[in-house]
Amino acid sequence: MLEKIREIFAQVDTAPIESAEQLEQFRLAYVGRKGVIADLFEGLKTAPPEDRRAIGAELNNLKNLALNKFAEGRDRLETLQAGVAQPAPVDLTLPGYPNEVGAMHPLSIVRARIVEIFGRIGFNVSDGPEIEDDWHNFTALNFPPNHPAREMQDTFFIEKNPDVVLRTHTSNVQVRLMENGKPPFRSIMPGRVYRNEAISARAHCMFHQVEGLYVDRNVSFVDLKQTLYHFSREMFGKDIKIRFRPSFFPFTEPSAEIDINCLICKGSGCNICKHTGWVEIGGSGMVDPSVLQNCGIDPEEFTGFAFGMGLERMANLLYVIRDLRLFTENDIRFLRQFGPVS
Ligand code: PHE
Image (cartoon, rainbow, N blue to C red; front, side, top):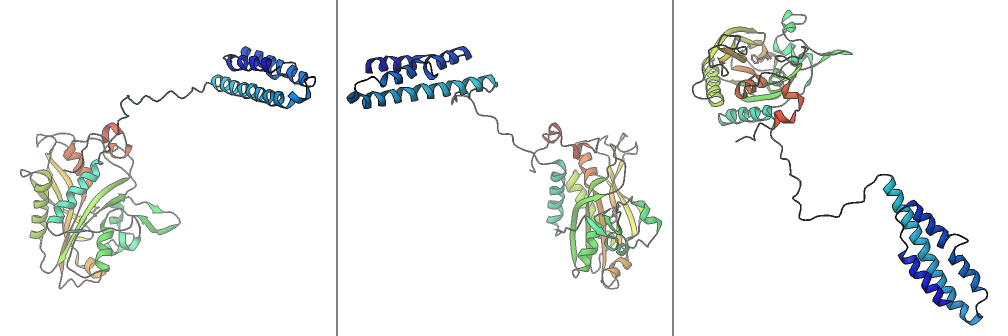
């Protein structure tokens, strides 16, 4: 009988289970109640009593082998049927997956350059909240309540509380800086601002400004002009031309808009400069004495200048980008073109 068991052992061991039919054949032949192993268990009853223990042990081994092989074959066929591929053997000679390296966002590059240029002439960086109260965004900056000047900046109000707005400019940081410290102040304030404008190639409801503030004794318009002239040359190159146009802001007096010559058409006229050869990059002026007063600074003792420039506008000029929406679409083909800060 032991010999018979060994024979079946070999059969079970080599029986192929590669299809549903073979699995069923295997089950009928070895696992089922009418199979050969069940017969052998039946035969055990008539074996000589002194041999039963040894034969029983062998039979149990045989039965376990058949059951395991059946279960393994069934699982394997099921997985194949579910369409789950068996894991391919690892080929260590294949080249690795490329490791994609990110690039800095063009606005971050421009921001870093501006921070660096002003850092070298003694300006530090200040930060402030994007959700702001009326005082810091408007009233302290000389926008009287209900004054049409507030209409210049299409404000997003937080509906439930008209005192809370998304800041329309980074000038709120000027106010916070002056309220919380003592002159001299020499600081720039880069940040995100919001205005309720329809999104197009030329306008967005969210964009970035860099504001600057210099308050000390004897600060004059000459300092303002020289600072911005120096900045423009560092930012756009030695040959850049800069021009100041008289303008109006409630918080500066006198006020001027800052233009540089169009880097895209080099002055010959294009859509970006509306065929004038000049592009506005921001506003500026001498801080209005009443703003200094609102922030607890004596305008008899101190004077100051401020400016605010658009980051997107500068990036457009430097990289010849004609559509503002590209900055926020996160198209990897666009972003990949900009290297890290040199
Ligand atoms: N805050 C102004 C704006 O957003 C820009 C500005 C800043 C003008 C500082 C003058 C001085 O339009």
